[in-house]
Image 1 (cartoon, rainbow, N blue to C red):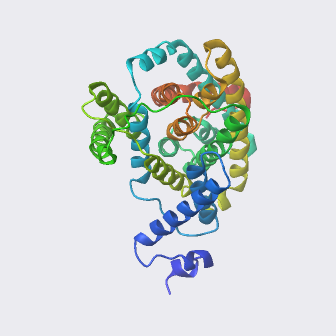
Image 2 (image 1 turned 90 degrees about the vertical axis):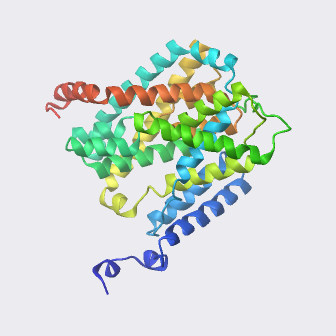
Image 3 (image 1 turned 30 degrees about the vertical axis):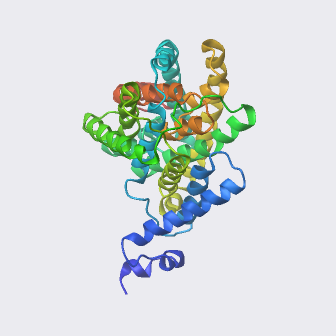
Length: 366
């Protein structure tokens, strides 16, 4: 018996793959089952939250799971297509008018997450480098890589980011339903659209995503399809629509990808960091709600739209929430994309500024 098999948990042994597809198939089965249960229970955003909770619980229990290959990316593409089909000139003009609000909101999110780093450092007992990159409202993989490059704990950074995104995805849709109401934004889709008409549109979406990816554009699998489909909608060569089942499959794939990020080894090694990450997620939700109240009053946006626009989770998850609730997903997309793009460009200057602040607050530099 190999050393790896000796140290494998009973749950891992029970789910040990007989081939490379076993962990993927198990995650897919858990995801579909979790989505169906959540849907029966009328959980908001059931087909994403259900799979996320089911796969995260199984992964933390020691089950060997793997996300569906390219599942998250194709799910993002479906969401991008759904948004792109309603990107009319009037919609784009209304988003452009919000440019000052988007800029101020982005600065607010950056300031809030930087302050969160000062809270995480003593709570999680992590060094300043790890605290900064763990709270930056950017992609988990990107921040983990940058943190490792600058001497931070990449595992701690990834753990905090995974908890932040998962917690916000769990909490924000519930809060939106509890304190808001569904919107009235409907898809602009022809009743004459043939189900197979979506296939060439998805092919165009994938090409646009592949074209943006080498350029380092944030969330190319969401933004590329959205832009490409927007052009398609403007030309209107033939009627196309995103059927309900496609959005369900997209949610399941994204939920599985979120849930399988959790690893029992990481949480077991960093229990204090995990608890601190949950506390930081709660603080960020409260800050987003407060900011949304200000943004709603200043820009005239519905509170629910402003909340989703400011929530520091993944772009796809917040845009998908807006889409399912028939809110203005285009506005949410604009706020979220600008935030990610600005943070990607300014992360290192902000890191240096944080170092100067850390010297004053903690008495030591990064």
